[in-house]
Amino acid sequence: MKLIHIVLFLFFLIISPIGNQLFAQNETFKIVLDAGHGGDDPGNTGNGYNEKDIALKIVLKVGQLLEDYQDIELIYTRKTDVFIPLHKRAHIANDAKADLFVSVHCNAHTSSAYGAETFVLGLHRNKDNLEIAMKENSVIKLEEDYKVKYDGFNPESPESYIIFSLMQEEFLDQSILVANYVQKQFTGVLNRKNRKVKQAGFLVLRETYMPSILVETGFLTNKAEGRFLNSKTGQTKMAEAIVDGLINYKNIINLESLDAQIAGMQVEAKDLTEDKQGYTFKVQLAASSKKIETKPYNFKGLDLISRLKVGNIYKYFYGEAKNYLDAKSLKDKAESKSFKGAFIVAFNKSGQIVSIQEALK
Image (cartoon, rainbow, N blue to C red; front, side):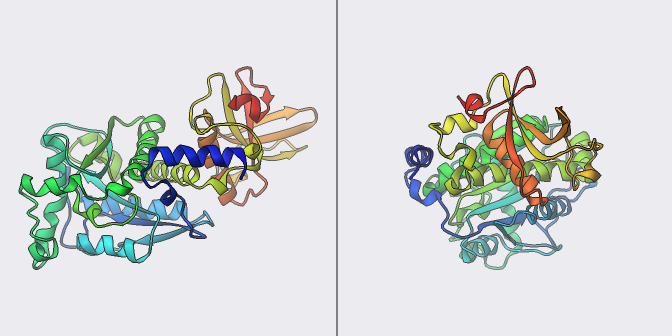
């Protein structure tokens, strides 16, 4: 096993009590996408919007973006406006032996609160977290015999939530890891207000047997944020942020996906995930003697294209990242658009191309 593999393997063994379960043995990485609410359950209706509709549109956009990745298999709990009981959503994920469960929602509050937050299953730390969980869990009252199905759970009783301190403990580290990557995209890339990664007792997460997160994309009760989430632009941006966070998580836990560029280097996990001061990473898509307009239509829909002339050759680059992990996700996205020969290039603060080794160390 190469040194970089050993270092990363030991790193994840340290942060997880069952580190060896981090590495999926499936040929494909299975993700279950869960659009909250549906059918007779509209979710919250802040400012006249329906949470169920917005959550579904975001989930379908996430799926559309992920379908371009050949090593990802998608399972949906719903793709239309239907009601799916919470326990069945978990069963869908468990039956598929999924590697990750992602539930998408929109928030609501009586105040002008705004911002994005990502939850994992656990004991609520404050009243606000408990209230959000109670609101999302109240949907079980639409189900027949819900007290039997959920072992006497009462969504309105704070005492019922004590059990969540023990549930899903073995997947907590992984769930927090993916939640942090998604939250970083919301705040660091989209500049949404950071309401952070939190723990609370969500029933939809309780019975899943894999890392699981619940995303609250924003508050429909906030006029500006509700308008943003109800727009096609807002839904696309939120979906892209979720996808980038999920891809970062998939890459960091899947050792075999690391590039040959760094396979022989003596680097640690922090070298791949920490931002590098004075360096940036881009993905080279092509080189040509022709000067091509850096427009998305010339690069299969990819934006943020830059061009650099080296001698008589023009080199074309996609995106810009401050760390190698984000650059790897950009490379994966480029490959999903059929740029199979794409590779990562490092630049110093003067804009000169330097070796990957120099940038990482």
